[in-house]
Image (cartoon, rainbow, N blue to C red; front, side, top):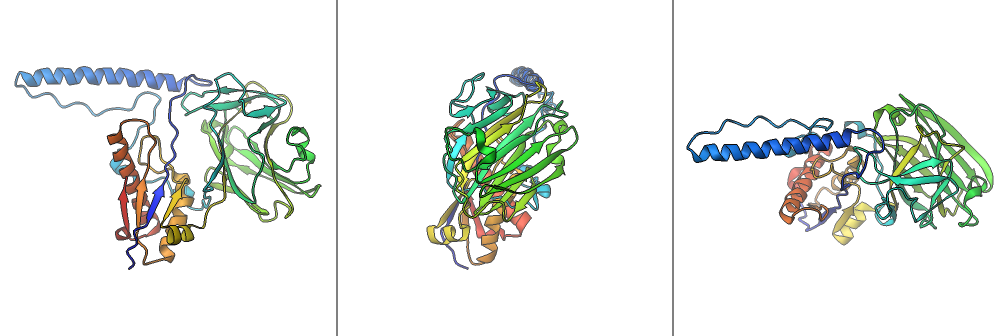
Amino acid sequence: MRTLALCVVMVLATAVGAPAAAQFGGIGNAARRAAEEAKKAADAKAKSDAATKKEGEQPAPAPAPQPAAGSAAQPPAANAAAAPAFESYSKYDFVPGEKVMALDDFSQDAVGDFPAKWNTNGSGEIVTIAGQQGRWLKLTRGGFFTPEFITQLPDNFTLEFDVMVAPTFTSGSTLNVALAELANLKEPAPWQSSNNTFTTTMTPGPSEGFSGMITRQDGSSASANQVSTAQLAAKSNRPVHVSLWRQRQRVRVYLNQDKVWDIPRALAASAKLNALIVFVPGMVDPSMEYYVGNLRVATGAPDTRNKLLTEGKWVSHGILFDVNSDRIKGESYGSLKEIAGVLTETADLKVQIVGHTDSDGDDASNLDLSKRRAAAVKTALTSQFGIEAGRMDTDG
């Protein structure tokens, strides 16, 4: 077996920061208050135990900690890698693009404002959502919404974003997300009649919703279709992660772990896409508003095998973890599968997996977390894909 000093650097993206205000539901505030009360009680118990110990008595055993009201119980770190949530993602083959072209989480915009880098003929504002990380663009009046910093989309790229509606959402206007070839980027309104477009649509419902696709090629309407999907169930009260992958004429669309569309001739060979359009037709009922967040556009996935063998390392942006945890998210399955494929095809290859974290918190904690995350990736590659553990070293 070749012992190559190759480094597979996993760039581990996690959302940080708690929401500043609730937009629907009070779960976040209730959980925070409960957590603060639990911490005060624990501090008081620790002081009492310390005083008792000074007097030579044995302190009573502390009760097992309980999750705060409204919060989900977190599994112990040691068990996180042993039970990854991959079962439902076994057919998920999306691999995020390598080089980020555009990224917007609205962190630079003030709550209550329309984002400075976007344009619209409707209305929207930046908000926070109880129990959800970061900031969101709430679409409050129908029209088009377009990020003006996107002016060119190559033949091979990935687009990712999150969509959410209130759990009370029953029916309303359809959300359209279009990749378009605009003649004039300063006037996006006539995007529906542009020469080349690919549009995916989302219509949530209480228990399930509908996803659609519409194409225009060289100035003429082409194919269109619609399917029902449980991923768009409003009552789940969870964001839907939308992933779109263009490879020349082919377009694939994923909603969470489901590949909803895979259209080999979705775009004309002549298409020169240069705009992303988010569109809601007509008026928007206040209880049927859409929330959009975490936009990321990146050039298409690299040749992983070539990167590893010629450059000695590969940086993956597609391996994601729960916040402050080494538990791998299920949507990482496609990237792990890509790495496992290279290791399976090149049986004499050994790799070193290096975990990363963000810069928040102290260095010692971050180093420990990065090492545990690298170990979790190794465990997943062994347990889910049968890669021999001895072929992988880990570091943080």
